[in-house]
Length: 277
Image (tube, rainbow, N blue to C red; front, side, top):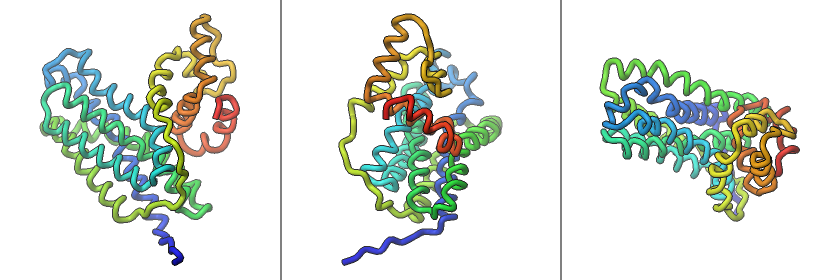
C-alpha cells in the first residue's frame, strides 16, 4: 500500500525550529547574571561554582556532532523531542536544587539539548522547498547568537525581582512549549541513514579536543592547513588527531559553531579538504 507524505507548512516548521533554537541557546547565558552569587547560593567555592557554566558548554560541545548522526540514524523528530525532554528535565532539577552537584547535573542536561540546532537544520533541508532552505537555515543558525543575547537581559531582570530558581522554572516552561510544538507540528523525516554509531569516537571526541593546544584549535577554526608549528609534542598530538577517525567530529562541530550560510558555502569545502571526512 503506497504511503503518503504529509507536507507541513514551511513557515510553521521554520518558526518551531527557530524558537527551539532560541530557547536552547538561551541556556548558555541563563545564569550569567548570578555568577558572582553562585558560591553563596550553592554553598561552595568560586572555582567549584564555575562548573555551573562549564558543564553546559562542555555538554553542548560534545553533543553537537553526535546529535546529527543520531538524527540521521533514528529519526530527526525523535532526536528533537528527546533533546527537549532532556532540557526540561535539567531545568526542573536546577529549579528544585540548592546545592552544587544537582545544579551541575541539571546544567549539563540543559547543554545536551544544544543538538536541537544541527538536527533542526537537517529537518529544514528535508522538509522545505529548495528555494526556502537557504533563508531558513540562516535564520536557525542565527538563533545561536539571538538566544544568548536575549538570555542576558531577561535573566538579569528576573533575578533582580524574583528568586534565582525562577530562571529554571522559566526554562522548563519554554522547553515544554517547544516540546509540544515539535510534537504537534513536525512530522518524522523519511530520510534515514541506518548504520553503526561510532561510540568510541563519540567518547574520544572531548578528550582529543582537550588534548590539542589552543593555538591548534584556533588555527583549525580558521581553516589553515598547517595550523601551528609548536613543540614536537604539540605537533605529535595534532598529527595523531588528524589521522584518526575522530577528527571528523571536530570538523562537524566547528562548522556548526561558526554558523550558517558562510560555513555552508565558502568555508566548508576548504575545511573538508583539510580535515579527513
